[in-house]
Amino acid sequence: PVTIRLLDPPLHEFLPHGEAEFEEVAKGAGVSVDTLKRRAAELHEFNPMLGHRGCRLGVTYPEIYEMQARAIFEAALI
Image (cartoon, rainbow, N blue to C red; front, side):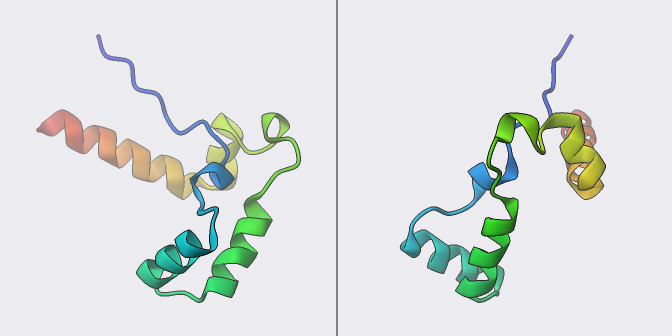
């Protein structure tokens, strides 16, 4: 048996924190630093324990669960 856990932490935990990180990620993503900072502010939650975690994240952003399921199936075929 294998246990696979899907993404549980709030999305803002995966975003850059310092100015240098924002610049690096923005450059890699091909967006402006201001656009990235604006999106990061939208994803930040006052109380992450009551916000977008686990299945609520999958309901709001189904593409994240689709990506995770695809990765699981591809890994199972290797």
